[in-house]
Length: 252
Length: 252
DNA sequence: AAGTGGTCTAGACCACCGG
DNA sequence: CGGTGGTCTAGACCACTTG
Image 1 (spheres, chains in turn green, purple, blue, orange):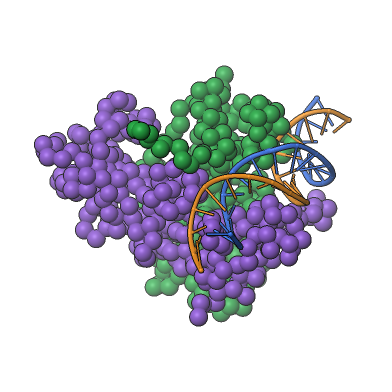
Image 2 (image 1 turned 90 degrees about the vertical axis):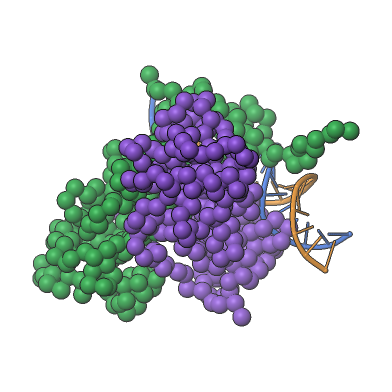
């Protein structure tokens, strides 16, 4: 027989469900609209709630849905592009950057960070906590590690912590000549403290951007920034990135 | 008040489980070692298998574990850094790039791609499929869209498809002067065809890198590359990225 | 054939948010 | 308070790999 053995592999239910929902989102829903609750949806599709949730989880991972406990599931707007790498290298806290210093402490960093900074594993370094907002939402939380040797003239006599001290530290840092920087992006899950800043649950998927600032042939500072993976598209390069968007209707 | 009311919130079991397993991975397991199967582990920790799986899923997302159906769960090696953006812009297929052309077709691209290329939505464009290997493993699958107007002198008389045609197409592309490029990174889930190339299940988490190549003040080509999020750390900038690694023992 | 991870079910209770 | 999503259970069967 001319039997083309097409479906020897049955498609998982949650995968098919995801396809159906994606098409529905593109054609029948507007951004911000609230979906039926999970129990109703599961019943409507004739599957268990856990199976439906598997589909919803993937759609949330892809930035198509937003779910909030006690509220409901809504259609997410297209991801916003956030610039994380420009052609010209600049120090953090330079003019026009999108970050806001929260506070500053001095403590021993994680071992992996200490190794990169070439400080001793128990040697305390300045640790600046910053937050990045975009379109009124928090999009990233950052820990910026600056070894004391990078800011030798910093006067630690006044408050050695707090937002004001953080700004003073960054001013000191700018006195060095920045010779280069490089970044890496990888997938991670939000630690409890970052999750709180990002208004997400712990474990939420994040894009971790690690940036090394080079001055005097040394790593003068190291930034570890965690971006919300559901709402952000990280852009590198000249012109603010590529606009990829799904077809979607506009809220009335 | 600054009262952080954390004591009233019980930690979810899977979250605690993840913490315990992470510490065990750091101290008691070597890269490549096989963990006990899920049923045994669940019994050992006194939880349901679904709960244990929730913890394992997060650890796999973070690149700490690798799970393969029919085989088992193994301790993953540290993520490999793959370079996706250098200071000097270069055309795809240039000297020393890590990609391997698979084949080439001519078809109408997705609507979002057509919009960026400023071609008609039903206008066919050259579509090159490429694969990227690193350390003997497939790390990325790419679709490179090249409108016919970018390669006007391409002779289509011989086979209009296949790897040989793909190489001819890239040679033509290199005749244009590349004026700039920019990229964006976002989280996605692998489509069925990409998953197959990447040796993963459909829906696996991937980092989608969209790169626009600009020549003659137009988008002369558009690349959409999906990288395995579990095994890859994408590096941008001068020097191949930052080496962040977990403490871990070496296989004997 | 045996053992693995992947999918699915039908429940239950909990934490959170809004009115 | 009622309704939402988040967590958890104790099973079952399936798809896949290996010996």
